[in-house]
Image 1 (cartoon, rainbow, N blue to C red):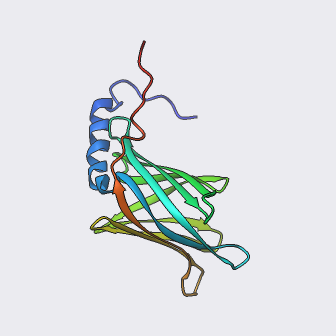
Image 2 (image 1 turned 180 degrees about the vertical axis):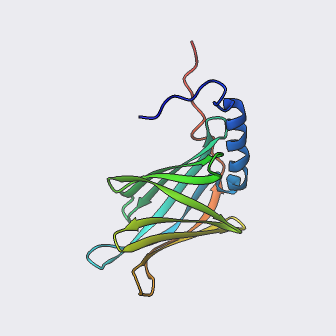
Image 3 (image 1 turned 90 degrees about the vertical axis):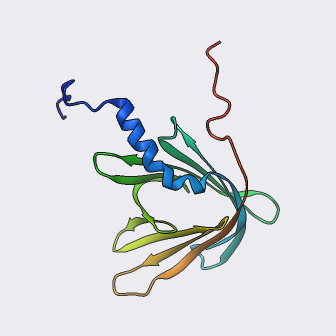
Amino acid sequence: MAAAASPQERADPAALIAAQREAMAPLAYMDGVWRGSAWTVLPSGEKHDITQTERIGPFLDGSVKVIEGRGYDATGKVTFNALGVISYDPAAHAYTLHSYALGRSGDFALKLTADGYTWEIPAGPMTIRYTATVKNGAWREVGDRIGPDKKPVRFFEMNLVRVGNTDWPAAGAVPPR
């Protein structure tokens, strides 16, 4: 167990939050409600088409970004649900996506690109890479399985459009009285 930092070594919480909030500013384009088509390849090899929705907003005074994704089948049943939190570590100068989906969770490095982001999941000898491009109110994200010495295999794609604003997740806080 690490020794606790002395008061002189601790960073000022207000300065940390300010740095995190500043780092979240380039991701403001994500905020809002998104909807569109998506597909994934199931373990059986079958292609599964859904309507995908995302709602995204700032939380903790803008120092993190919260994401909820839902996939609906043709009957309107939720067949996919995920929760993600994007954070920034000022000391490491790095973004992290903490993701909950399909009964699993994990922390993954998120790298900003000129028009979106990428993140990867190590999967044994393979890597699962998600690449998102967001421009002009359109969000395209693809998922590829990348094996050693093999061409990437696309198993996921979503194409969303921004359909509106949201005050989620910050709205509806419990008042003090």
